[in-house]
Length: 286
Ligand code: HEC
Ligand code: HEC
Image 1: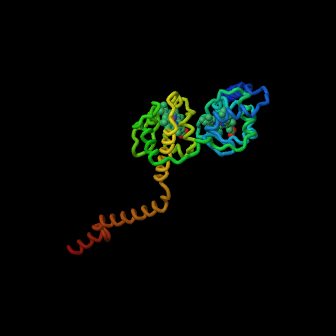
Image 2: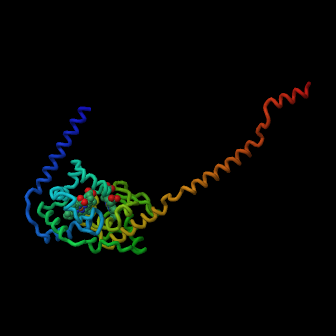
Image 3: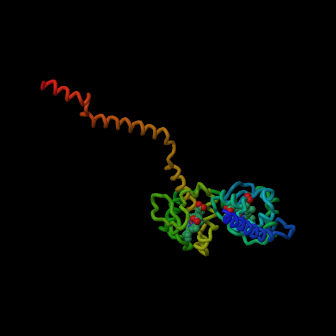
């Protein structure tokens, strides 16, 4: 017991030390022009964040400067997983809320992050970047997406098929990979823009490496987003929903059938008492 406590305290101290080291990166206060911040935001953050446009892959960043301290934001943007590992409760909660998707580390100087914050503070609402909007895929695109997903059509730049790491529940696809997450519910969890951002610029190291220098072309991204949308919709249709009354009916029906069966099987069962037969026989012999 005491041993566990001491270990726990040790972990806390370690965590605090990591955090202090992280936070020191943001110690110097420099006024930042929103201009550079705008550039950074539009080139690197916009795939996953909006300013007042709602949740995308990550949270809406409007008002983040009021929710969190500047030092925390700087630490988070540079190495969010270090905060999570150190047990920072805000970071852990966010990580959980966003499906345990690590925000990729942004190798930015502290003043650059401040610039982004200044831009966020000064910007009007910025919805998803143009091109990130969910243009519904045509049927043809969805079919293309399916065959790109399983590799029957090769990706233009030679990247590996998604099935080398992922599987989905789809009639046409068997034997997808198990290295990475099953993607059947990805669309409902991440939304069209979220999937699009992930495919176009994967935040996961393994997937990033697979498509480095072999990025998907925009049409392929649209096709795959469309396909994953279809897979999600199919899944929703097959969900066992509204089973209550039906199950009850099946139960009652089943019981009636069983009762009838039993009564047929036991048609020749003993009626009257066992003694009756003996008694009858004795009456006859005496
Ligand atoms: C690939 C997607 C992605 C990119 C790119 C990205 N983020 Fe994030 N961000 C996330 C996710 C997901 C979260 C939620 C936390 C988590 O899952 O760990 C998050 C959380 C945050 C938070 C915490 C928000 C809050 O409500 O406390 C801040 C601040 C943030 N990101 C800033 C940035 C900045 C600034 C950039 C660009 C330099 C950026 N992010 C780029 C995905 C991304
Ligand atoms: C080399 C392996 C690899 C390949 C190939 C790959 N991915 Fe991934 N992908 C990953 C890993 C690893 C993750 C991180 C999540 C996890 O651990 O499963 C991921 C995550 C994702 C996610 C987010 C899942 C979620 O629910 O959070 C989506 C969506 C996705 N991949 C789509 C694709 C698509 C579409 C393709 C094909 C163009 C593809 N991936 C190809 C390895 C891969």
